[in-house]
Length: 225
Image (cartoon, rainbow, N blue to C red; front, side):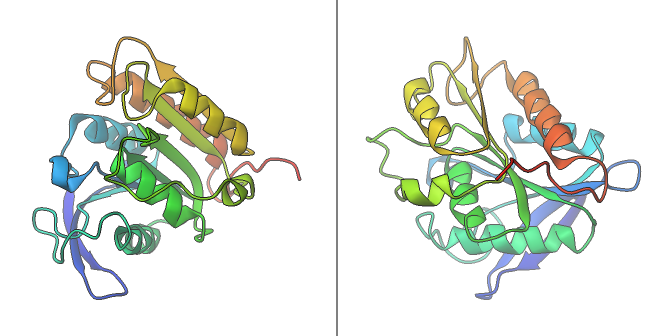
């Protein structure tokens, strides 16, 4: 594990950790953490599990702290300026590894990752865990418009625990009908934190990444027009 720093286009210096695979990387991944005002950082068991799984599958993986979190500079932007953080993280890891990039996010990080990817074709696929969908959750910006989601044709994986109060299964399934290339996995016996199911969830993310990104240099598997 290698500590790294990189900067956003608006001049914010962010801290991260880079894990390289044991062989030459076949692609890259960026991991986005949960809400910093609720204790979210890059150092959470579910994110460690995803990071390790993706590295074992040959990806260069960058985990980082959003602006205003731990030793990242700047201040919390309510999920809006954090889009610049994801943009910078993608650029940073892609400078180190050729091939496609999967962007993964949990909770607040899933919301930011989705909104960033709508305008960034470098995100070849998305894996979103516990994406906040409950109407009562006002800690993240609103979901993108349905028209924007229908036009997003890159592969998306949606994961949630069956007892996730922030990402209820019915709302997740409804979202899945909007996204043209979407897979959904609801894990029984756990909640928003995916307690005791971290490795299982990470394995689902890893299998998805291997399947949709394809062999080195091949790019993502895209749905038919």
